[in-house]
Image (cartoon, rainbow, N blue to C red; front, top):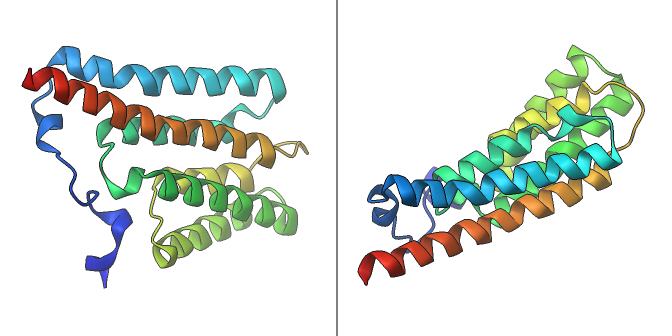
Length: 172
């Protein structure tokens, strides 16, 4: 069963050998986009919300995308579906059970089960479900979080583009 799970293995046709051959300069070039994206999301959150910790899991997503942009865990589909689903599940458990361990535990378990069943395994989404289930205050940040996830999904394209550029320069 797990052999057919696309979110648990490298993207078909991915040339992962380039990633292993990157120099320190190449690694830094690959790290620029995730850093800029996360800082941009933080700036957006600072302007529009006071619930900063709700967005912390996106930093983990950005690092995973930097670490292996050609893995199924880091595709736009997997990232967006897992993160948005986790936020909604966390928000629902918060609304039903309030902020606490019961809400967080249920959100975490449901998120993990649905990520596996839907083949959208993205580990930072578990933190997202916990953040929304355990949040403080009454601000509703689902729309803002969705925007931040969309911005982070652009990171997937940027990282693949950067790998493509690095591949071009390494062969010339």
